[in-house]
Amino acid sequence: MRICRLGGWLLAGAAGAALLSLAVLPTPAQAPAAYKAPKTKDGKPNLNGIWQSNNEANWDIRPHAAYAGPVYTLGAAYSTPAGLGVVEGGEIPYKPEAAAKQKENFTNRLKLDPEIKCYMGGVPRSTYMPYPFQIVQGTGTIMFVYEFAGAVRVINMGAPTKAPADSWMGWSNGHWEGESLVVDVTSLNDQTWFDRAGNWHSDALHVIERYTAIGPDALQYEATIDDPKVFTRQWKMSMPLYRRLEKNAQLLEYKCVEFAEEVLYGHLRKQPLQGKGDSK
Amino acid sequence: MRRHVLSSLFALVATGLLVSAPVFAQAQVAAKPAPAAKAWTMPRTPDGKPDLQGVYSNATTIPVARPANLGAKEFYDSEADKAATATAGGGRAGRGGAARPAADPEGNGLAVHYDTSQFGLGGPTVKRAASLRTSIITGPEGRVPPVLPEVAKAAQERRAYQQAHQWDSAQNRPLAERCITWGFEGPPMMPVGYNSTLEIVQGQGYVAIVQEMIHDTRVIPTDGRPHGPAEIKRWMGDSVGHWEGDTLVVETVNYNPQVVIQGQQVSDAAKVTERFTRIDPDTIQYQFTVDDPKTWVKPFSGEYNMVHIDGNLYEYACHEGNYGMANNLSGARATEKK
Image (cartoon, rainbow over all chains, first blue to last red):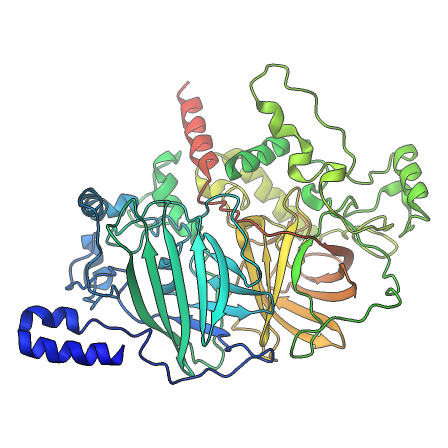
């Protein structure tokens, strides 16, 4: 891969700027092969810990400039910071009608974004929402607990099993490939998004995740996205995840249902709330 | 699927089927702390701790409170004694063998909502730990002690307000109906009317327990850290654990003031201690003590066993599928217009 990248650089130099953007695609998952995580007592890479992304993917997984938030009264505090994006190549290969739906989603995001409603984030979005998550590495299973909405999934590390039905967090079968935890996630429903920009998928979504330690306090996360109903080809996102290093770091509760009730059910109140933004 | 089950449970509650017994108080029981089987040795995780991992059912037919006719009798003498006492004495041994509801007379499909086996209440459908215990609450009284007079008064006032305003808004509905907590996640963790299923995973320095109901997950540190800041009140409290021999001991404080234990809102003084002990290949003995001197006249303790089951936990997307909330509120608004 290194050679490819180097070749890419040379090619880009020779062929001009048109190719540059392709040539410098980040390939982080493959790059840092040198580091080996400390092992658990049963000899597996030790991924235990509380982790969090530190990027702008939850606003938009694609490269984007800063822009105003959807509620003008919140001003600068809740507007969107610019982000380099986490999609390898920068572009999501939507089918034309699917690209149109993304734009619609974005326009109507205040009504449609499942995050606003406190719905579980699904996979991969839960990974890079701006909340920590914890990996509890058991022997036959590995639990991923997410602070947002208390979402959780238990990854089966034994013989792969099949989901009886679709769900918000999907069905996860995992295995080790060298230093990487590889999780095959299927049976995800079509209700979750990739980000606040309305990037979306169908219930045909299939995600293959790789978690690889790249240092004592960082993981490389890579998710291969396949959804033939929505995309013309597979695509990939990748980003580092960082360990929460506070001595007393712990996952706290973000049971957000009560924060979403007014949005979801406020129109059905007996007495309308006095004053906007009051919650009681 | 979930919404059927949820609405069904509410239907049961509404009809009083479940309400009479501190509802879900129906928990189950645990066996006498039986001496471990001869050949069995404690399985351990790679770091040497007792291995509690797996999927468990804490369903039970044992009531939380001991039937009054049993006095101070903490255990039945035998299964035969249990069956006879429960029937003849009018004691409520739990809903385990509860008769199925009548068929659906109007043919509108509602019958399925009263199919107790759907909720794990039917005898044969759910694995339970065998037990001769007469109540989950231990000790000669076998029931949750009374609350302090001022606590009872405040609770009564809350109830009266609630009844007058129960359909005013989503925030006026019970926590379980809002999918905030089911009320049995605890600690202490109590069996629920259905889906009394939980999974334990042990990682380095943590024991994590996910309960199927509302996918509520406790990540309990066992690395010796103290409780978090008292400012941070939590729906499942603030738990820290340690090992005493082969028993996992978990202490929990800092409950959100709306948390309800055994039907009663707890105070900022509430402290719950749980003890998890694996006692045979299939069984974890679960013991708890609730101490809240600002709420109850004295502490109380309970005990039941969890039994290992095959299979998985499934996602209980309570809030995501809570169509009942909007439907109920819009029904209330429509009724007001009549």
